[in-house]
Amino acid sequence: MSRHDIRFTGAWRSRLSPDAVYAMLADVGAYPSWWSAFRSVRQTGEGECEVVIRALLPYALTARLTPVVEDPVARVLEASVDGDIAGSVRWTIDPDEHEGCVARFAEHVTVRKAALRLWMPLARPFFHLNHAAAMGSGRRGLAARAPQVHQVHQVHQAR
Image 1 (cartoon, rainbow, N blue to C red):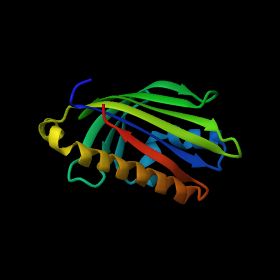
Image 2: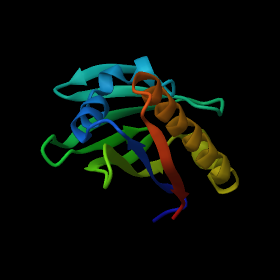
Image 3: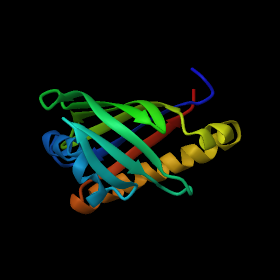
Image 4: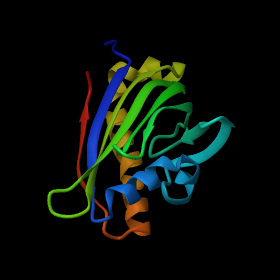
């Protein structure tokens, strides 16, 4: 792993059914309507889209998401990411032991945007904070659509 690589993991808990949460996360085109960090989503090909993401810091990331796994039975979503960041993002949605589900995400990306690569050694904590803000906006947006949703934890690891 290079100094430009970042890994993020976390989970959201919901009283909604695993299938309902899977369907919401699978509909990337609708993200801007409930996930404020997603400024835009533009369809670019069969299942492929370009997203623009911006959270707290004064920069936006543009990336192409290409589905790798879309399994509604196992409730797994995975996409390759290419653009200002490159790598993969994966969601797994599992039934909770009590009711509802837990949606877990894992993201491993390499920062490719030149200005961010330059600052990476010093700004890594800020990138983690920015990612936490972006994920928090998604959790809050999903909660607004389905008030039963709340975040269990969000762990950021840099490797």
